[in-house]
Length: 108
Image (cartoon, rainbow, N blue to C red):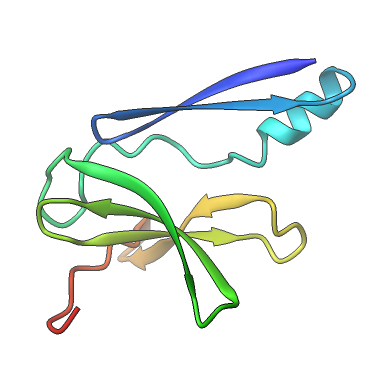
């Protein structure tokens, strides 16, 4: 059994296919894509975003959303209980949690 999941990151639409032996398994796998669409950069407001990944120090794996205009990044986190579940990182801002966009630092 398969389920097709669409996620929109800026102008890009990403199509994911999840599979399982039955409806429960398929829904469990789809839940690992627990992040919502990201329409604009949290720093400059641009929709010129790209979804990517990189590895640091040959052991740390990162999935990121990068603004192609201002170069800000939004990192995905991984659940410690299940490292196949990804979510968008958030930070406290007043009484709310907002996406944790990081502006480009000088020297990057």
